[in-house]
Length: 412
Length: 76
Image (tube, one colour):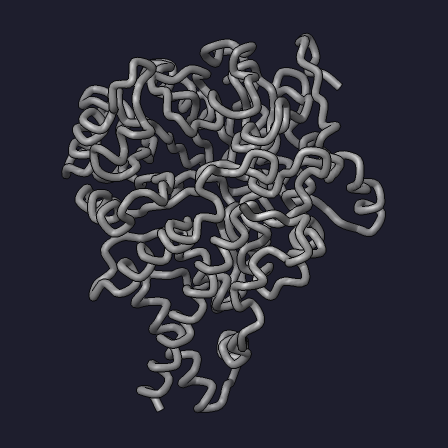
């Protein structure tokens, strides 16, 4: 299979699950139907002004960025906007979410960003609305850019990994210069009264060598509405060097932040990862692809128009995110028949036997999908971070349970 | 290093089998029942107050509304 007009074969041979073992026809015969896509990640620029050492786009298995156009052309973003509109209409969606991403999306230039936002909103048929957001490293986020983003109503998430030394250890430019000072300047602007309405939150990649509470306090100083903590991408064939280190595990790092956050006399910010666990612990559904069994409703459009699965799959193997489809030639509905997309919507049926035997599987949902990968087997494995997730979920479960018990005792 | 090819399932040493609070499951399910008893109402109110204080989504838990998972973005 290859993208029409392009020399890029799609080979999923190292992932028998789902590509060889998932019987898509049988699923359809059983009456299974996919969920519509609701969130679209547009890779508007393929390059980055930073060279973070853990970046899944540049430093891991997939190197497809090298062969793609550096920037998304008007032809591609117009096609993407029309495909999103077509999909929304066909599935009677009332709202779609569009994320401008890269590389570093601000490298595309604010005029191009404004044109893309306009194209997306114009293409959507009434009454469908679009919520637009951007995830940026913050380096180029100056006052003029913020004014333009405010006019475009594009919400902004910024990546920050903690204090200056912790952040700069991983998030530096190609010459090794840390980016903290520039990100700090951007976050001060963004959290000020003029632009605060645009400030969605901060994304932090966990480094278990850092002090978790100090990291939380650094992030809190910018008064973000929300935070999220991401585990660095890894899998069974390429585990993180700190995996399995009992004295500084990812799980214990997250537990220390959870306790600091949960025990605050007044909630200081939202932490999506923890909130999602609590929702599912209490019997609800998750809204994050990292927790729970809810169907993933996300598609990515690359700078060349390729329709892809979640970009973090690039951490697994060359072409892992590919579907062979393109917005230039295919409706987004076609992605709903792709085994990779279907596997993300199957809930418990996509989990390994080992996961299904575990009482936590409804909460962890098997962990983040790329973290389940093992070369030669594919994605039907527990997360490589299984032990960390289990310790965190156990901890949250028992804290929430104790809290509710105490309330019940007081109420009776 | 963790290894799922080993005989011991990953995380088996992590107390997965400890008593998971069945009554907490009951607690959440009771809140979905209409015309609950006074006792059920205490349970439901406690849960609702917990969710409000924590600024968590009541509908996600109390209505059992289905979720659709999002990518790592901050769209509200």
